[in-house]
Length: 193
Image (cartoon, rainbow, N blue to C red; front, side, top):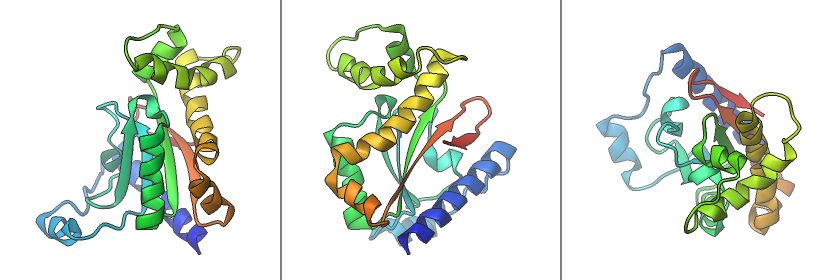
């Protein structure tokens, strides 16, 4: 049953992205009535783990409204305890059927990881979380940053199960689907990986 809800949510996100890319975004469920309706309770159709990048706004690029998405953002969409706990919350308290891991083009965190630049403070921790994806794609043809960003989205999807017994069990019991995707900033298109 949850798999049907995950498939429906994914289809709705894809349809919204197609509208966004075509310049026909509807901006649904963003009026005062919707604001009042979701003030007391939320029931999003999906959770999205994505980058903190200001150009990556899931509600816009999937043409969704208030309360439709539970969004978790970290630089380079790296998994830390707060991100994992937030996704576990979405599963346990909001019964979301889908977690979407959304990487993107021109990601500054991935670009820095590809360049091998260390960062001050905790920035280097973020780079270290991305570097395995860089190493996995070092011999791939094409753009190194794009290759690493796609791989990082894929790896993040699989790393969630390693970091969260709750999410792993939900996937095993078919209560949850975890899907990775890649957003192209210039075209606006989301590719499901």
